[in-house]
Every structure is written in structure tokens, then in C-alpha cells.
Length: 255
Image (cartoon, rainbow, N blue to C red; front, side, top):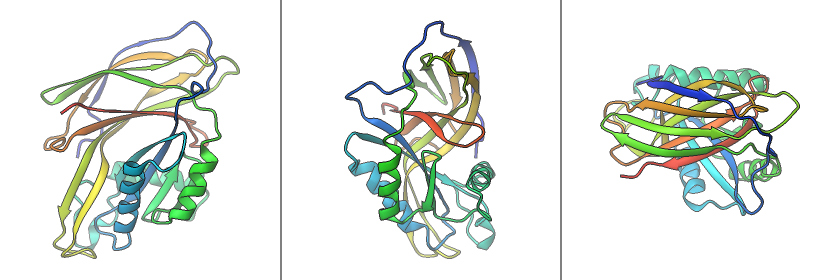
């Protein structure tokens, strides 16, 4: 599993101010992070719900940007999830702190860093999405996305959003469009499991003052064996003190 594989090439700050709201008429991006594991018996229903939300995009005026983040703490029960990483376990632990939970659990769905719920709970997911779509979002643009062998280059732009001062962390994710496994051991032994938008690289690419904005050129390394069914890039801004997602964007890589 490649944790980082991301190299910053250039950073420049903007000089003008802009309203930090998605343009009228465009869909509001909402980030859905599913913390899951192939070693967890109760996780497949959460995987299926995430795939359905991604495929059907059921919320009017909303773009649901989904990520499957496979934790590694279930690996001890006999099946090592091939998509798991301690990176996602650590990220989920940070959410547990932000939400004042006793600890992490799976499947857990985090909606825009604001709401958390059991990942297979369709009703609660619908309510959280409806609440999140009312929030203003900082626009993010992913452009010039090109793959050359095991490297991907791209440009990310965040326009200046004016005072007051507000810091945000920029995260970049490279995810497999689809993935599947035939599980032979553990709680899901004998089952064929399918996943959507499986995070393979997740890295914080610095922080910024939203008053300044940024333009950034990035190079990412594709993990060995990833991308046979397509790749997605997700970029999102997160409040480092609360975990709230301030903006998100998705681009799919051409096959």
C-alpha cells in the first residue's frame, strides 16, 4: 500500500477575492467517506449503499463524491484486506476525536466531515446529505489530469475567498474506480466483495489561508497493480480543527 506517493511541484497564491460559494446552478459537492473492511461481516451492506449512492446520485442539486477507506484493524481476524492501510485507521481515529466517540467502528460513513453514522443506514445518510447541501462550499478545480506510466500529473486551483482569515488543509486522493476480492478467510470467508472508489493514495498536500487561494501542480505515483478498472482523483479542503469539509472536487482519469 502506498501512503504518500505525492510530490508538490509548484505553489502560487492568488491576489483577488472571490465569494466562497459554488456558482449558482452547479451541483453542491458533498464528500462521503466510508470506513470499511473486507474482514468485517457487517461492512458489505455499507459498501453496497456507497456504490448505489455513487451510481444513482439521488440527491437533487448535489454531487456525491464517495471514497472507500479500508482500515487495517480487522486484518488480525484471519483475512488481510488488500486495500487496507493504517493511514485510513489513523484518519478514522481523528474523526472519532472530532465527533467525541469512544472509538472507531465499521462500517462508518462520514458526510462532509460534519455527520457520522452507521455506513449501511440509508435513512440517516439521506438526512445528513440533505443537511450538508445547505452549506456554502469553496470551489476547487482539478485540471490537466494526465497519466504517464506510473505517474499522474494534475493542477489544482482554489480561488481566493476573502476575509476573515481561515486556514484549511488540502487533501488529495487517488482512488480505484472499482475493486473486488474473493475472500477466503475471516468473517466474510466465501464471499465475493465489490467496492467503489477505493482510496489507494491519500495525502495532505499542505495548508492554505483561504483568503489567498492557491494554484498547485502535483505529481502522484500510482500504486503497483492499481487502476486496471480506472482511477479517480478527489481533492478536498478540510478545517483542521473541526474536520468539516469546506469544498471537494472529483475528476475521473480517462482509460
